[in-house]
Image (cartoon, rainbow, N blue to C red; front, side, top):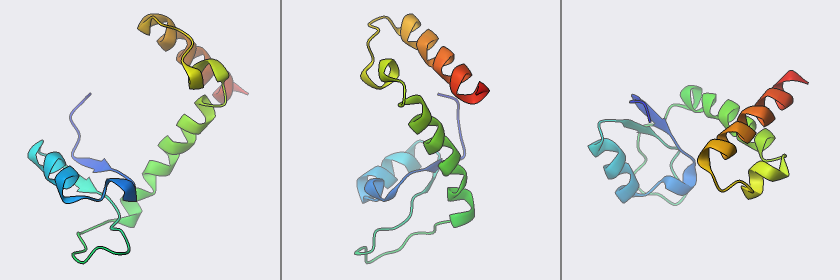
Length: 92
């Protein structure tokens, strides 16, 4: 994975252990705090909105049964199927 400055995550990843691991890698976590969390960390809703585009892309790819269940055993064949599915879903 390429190096990034900010890592976006959902509320399920709002734990001290996950945040510490992300920060040890030199990346700033942008994770919304859970409602029951006593200490609320800094969070940018404007930056978090960019994560929505990535979520929609993965949901579109999972519409293809071959991708969702990973029929291909070879990584090369699976990547080719992902590329074909992405081309079809964004071309139409």
